[in-house]
Image (cartoon, rainbow, N blue to C red; front, top):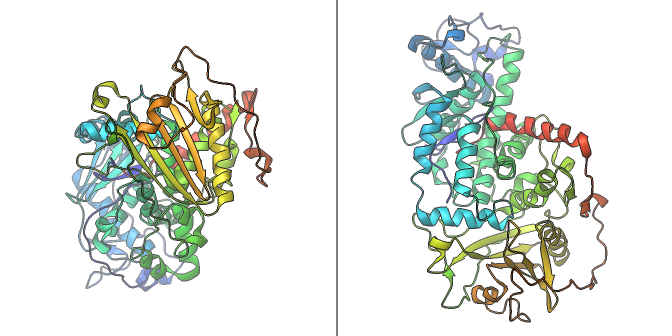
Length: 549
């Protein structure tokens, strides 16, 4: 299940757009009469043109002053002025002409939470169970946690506005419940999503998995957040600070997201703007427009921009070899498999260091901070850089909807056998972090005790560049879900029987990965880790305003 019900702006930026529009370009922004002079200020606007043109909308030039008092909220007349000038400014920055004016409304955070609850309330039973399996497979959300509820909480507290392609409406979320206020930067991104909707057929993009959603958002949100960046630069310079930026435009004080899930969702908001910026600076807006005709096919292509158009991902399939007691989950009104891609697998191995406050490190928390103005997060690491494709299929029995006992088969393809081995090195450290112990009769089989959060059995197999992970409630059930899994194991050590002692067999040569990629345990970062966590959270908040539903 992917919640794609509207286009949302995560806490600082703005969110997505999905609707039918005609592909087309317009004259570059430099053709605007106001673009010819670098000395234009926010109150030096020429007369209205005889016909509509870039940088002018509904009687307002992009650099005109407008008579509004945003401190006490905007009345309908003031809101119309802000929207008209905002549209003109987006046109000026991006070089695309609006075809129509989208309706805009400012709502409170409480109103948005109610709307979000209604959207997620329509999730089917099979969708909810599938989401639980998907994020449990990343060892981020255990069986006692509702993954849909975690995503709903992330959305309800982490979105600054959204564009609804079904109605064509924009809603801006305000933290001020008494006099809801407008944040012009959030508005600019939602306006741009409406413009994307009008110019490009974004609704045709396949975003059925988390990986495809993030991949396509590499251009959708990458373009949107890059436009936001340019818009804000103009606010601070060319437009002499004449932009509406209320003090309450940040994150709600009670916002407490699941940081692991959030980091997966934020990838296109970090890597996307840099991807678009490079294209724009090297080849101009027309090159950016052309990407909509061939959007990124994987997060790999925005994490490593040189792979865009050059390294297509492998379409991974999972053959069903289960017994009559188990079957792939049939997801009503949704996709019955998931893919997390390079970005999702990176966060999977990075998250333990954050969650444990540095006591257990697979990928150092500091590796995730890129520090770039457009690209604050890094999703590149040797453990996951060789990704080439993945597919995760949940498995259930007739009783799974009552017991919540499920399993899965997770197939991955890597660029080379060495890349597959490197990922498995990190993944086995993740299993160890969650309390898994190998079964002596088959070192590829692991068991997490019933007293632990992720109490399950795991079978991990590498065949050249291919990796297969099988999960089941018991060791015995592994071969019921995947024929041939855990072949040497006939019994489950269970809760009361300690797992067999791990073997000491390690034949792989050390990799050339940096020393930071080995598991580290101990005191971690100590008191200083709070500073790092705060830095990560601050960056997340800045990106959140731009995230899409």
